[in-house]
Length: 116
Image (cartoon, rainbow, N blue to C red):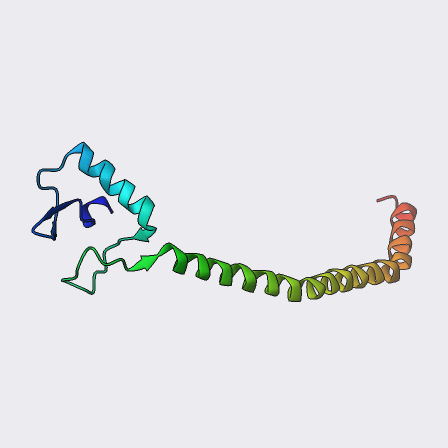
């Protein structure tokens, strides 16, 4: 990601890795932290101004908040269904177990009687 960012400028235009110094890298990171912008490469655009951000932190925060709200709403709506499903499944298995108990006792007695 670093090579796609305007670390060096000449006449106001961005250039890559020309006369790159440690101070320029630090200034670059300082600029990113102060401006809250994210620069990244879009393969569908062959020429663009590298000083123009494609996404801002605020947009990402809004998207994250929307996802979190949607997740919480989905979880809230799904929780009663999950509980109902678990309770129903437990009740079905319990009913089957109780209905099959006499058959299981009969099989045990029959196995003991035959000495198997």
